[in-house]
Image 1 (cartoon, rainbow, N blue to C red):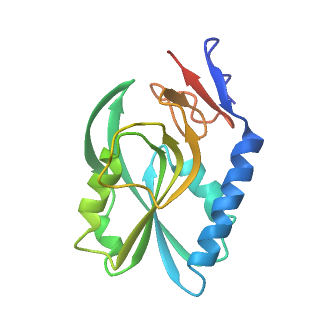
Image 2: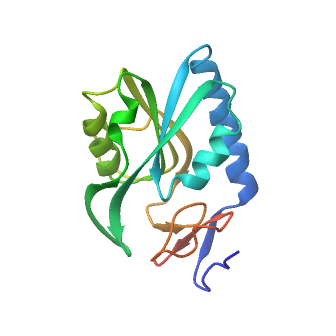
Length: 173
């Protein structure tokens, strides 16, 4: 397991994250009882969260994956579909799983991709960053609210490193 960089500040411990995921899993279990749901995990960052969440669920579920690229290092760029078969969710009820919601561009991009294909689309994010911006697309389920800083751990990386950290840390100012 990686160690956080020396300048990293602990934002959420592994236990805090697990308890918060438990609470959201209960809500999803209630909201989708007796339904088949396809979870669409956005690789790579959402993979640990996808596992953490889906193993707590009792709904009838399928899991699909697509890869959206949104960052190069700490620099944000326009979302791009890099890999995955988006047609695999045609006609299904989909819950998009993402690690972090900051400016909403990734989620909006994915909703646009799915709009003509799916029956219904919902979303769940591990973290929603604080913001004063009004966004056109908001997540339906939010596990934790986080400061608007660059975050690593629990799937979030910095140049490909630190995804395996069990807790979430902020780096930089």
